[in-house]
Image (cartoon, rainbow, N blue to C red; front, side):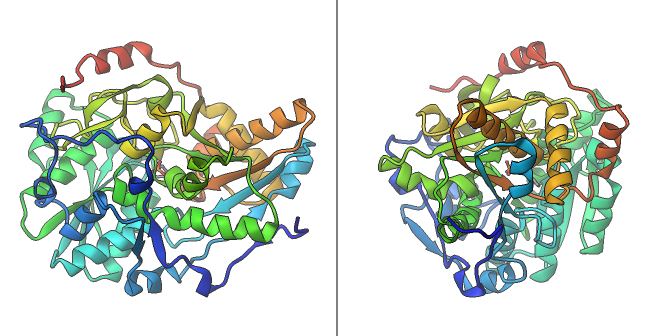
Amino acid sequence: MSHHSKFVLTDKQIPSVWLNVLPLLREPMDMPVHPATLKPLTPGDLAPIFPMSLIEQEFSPQKEIDIPGEVLDIYRLWRPTPLYRARRLEQALDTSAHIYYKYEGTSPAGSHKPNTAVAQAYYNKKAGIRRLTPETGAGQWGSALSLSCQLFGMDCTVYMVRCSYDQKPYRRMMMNTWGAEVFASPSEHTHCGRAIRERFPDSPGSLGIAISEAVEDAATHSDTNYSLGSVLNHVMLHQTVIGQECLAQMELAGEKPDVVIGCFGGGSNFGGLALPFIPAKFNGDPVRLVAVEPSACPTLTKGLYAYDYGDTAKLTPLMPMFTLGHDFVPPGIHAGGLRYHGASPLASHLLKHGWLEARAYPQLPCFEAALQFARTEGILPAPESSHAIRGAIDEALAAKAEGRSRVILFGLSGHGHFDLASYDAYLSGKLKDYEYPSEAIAESLASLPKVG
Ligand SMILES: *Cc1c(COP(=O)(O)O)cnc(C)c1O
């Protein structure tokens, strides 16, 4: 075991491939289906909104996919990212557990999202696309894609969930600075946005609604594609640079994690961290992989595994996933990036078959963990990431209660420099926990489409 607290790799150790676990799966995965015909989705069905290179990655049978040189050149601006051992946090907890964290907040946009944004902008540019239309919740995906479009000389139109647009003006300013146009969603700019505003003039918006607007914009303009920041297989794939670096860094630390923990919105940072541990796990490694979500939007722990739309206006394919129903509008909790009704089909598949664990926490204990982390380790975490910190602290406390050691690795997916208003609300006692909205969930689940 190393005595260092920071484990850095050189430029040469940036992974040269993305890891694809699809061909390794032990159980066959359910396939997405076309929303109208209910037949298995074909690559051609996705062609109006995605370039063929990304569609191929979505269904790829290859175990490894080479990362293009132009993407690596941009990754090099901040990758490899550091891995730390949280010795001061361990001391404060008085635990014999060893806590490691992988920090993705060193990217220009402040989170893991540029890992896929850069790749998606690159492949779209190569396919001759002129403009991308992302949705964004807390503003992280919108920032990552605004940056990436700018680097590849493309336009970017962002549909930002209205409550975040109002709560987080600095994220919008950041996107504008990188040259993007930003609309509060639901907006007047699309047919489905106008329809929702007519029925619910005060709608705070949701990721499901913003995705509908972004998809509509892309599908109705031939030089424009849609871009999704989580959930899909190709997004999970691009994020595997995180976990691959961790494998090398844990080796430098001379330890092997007993448990790997990530916060879970659509699944991309968790997948990026955890999927590279899957091949060993399939071969008998007992490592536990734990996804942590907010109890205000408990997709994995209270949702159903079913076919559902990825958006509110039912424009997307039906995906087999854990879902709270495409009509579910979660309460406006501060971890905006975790307010999604669905989940990655790949993560859902692995959870259903027992390869992953899931856990939900209310936001107050997460902010408490974020503060303890900021005061011991110095980094001010994104509210999303605080869910992983809570999970890691609880693992460390459990190890202590059992009188055992445990090696814990968690993903610190981003910094919270644009989330200070939520810290302020917490510090001044204004932040509330939301009751698990069981009626809202039951109502929303009642409108799941009937497939098969
Ligand atoms: C977007 C975001 C998340 C949640 O999205 P995933 O796809 O589940 O990773 C988590 N943390 C940060 C910092 C984010 O920006």
